[in-house]
Image: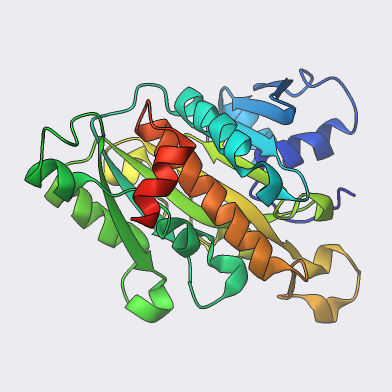
Length: 282
């Protein structure tokens, strides 16, 4: 069921505006739907200022992959498809990438970035200590900036400082999103190349992470984990409250692992899910 309310997903806004009409009807917006290995994928391109005004989002490419209800049963094929979509959306991947795990690890619906971080392959130090053994791997670094309320420092400020110090060619930011479709909570992944404004989906927008603020491309990957409760009912007392799935603990953990595996496969080409499991377990 698609409902009104704020959403971080470009495709949800497009669906609401099109209301079943042709996907090409919105000015400045181009969209296409496909299936990749049985996973529904929708790509929305915001082409110009008309599209930006229509969808209320920055110009760029937004790719949404829908997931099955039991993600753990198809984690490997899903992560392989996600890796393909990450490479497609990112274009040319640089030799060094900074991975930014955003969000508050102490709040389950906002812990996606932290949970993904535990499954990400970090190789910068390994390539320096043993260049020959890790030559096939891209150099990756990881930061977990937390949130302003616990660190006292904006995530964008921390990441900007790390970019100056380490010189990555791209930032990949992972964060939980707000959605508008109850059926797609923890059941879809959005990848976009326009960056991210942490907290914007829940009305707590912080400084954006994008090419303008960091000076390098920013790829954002996220999963909707909450819906604004005020969009479900006219009751004004619901303002500021959010709805999340009852099984959010297990679902956000599975989604975090999916994103991490997809990022690993996308960045370290030739790596298999079996090899990745061995590296992570070791």
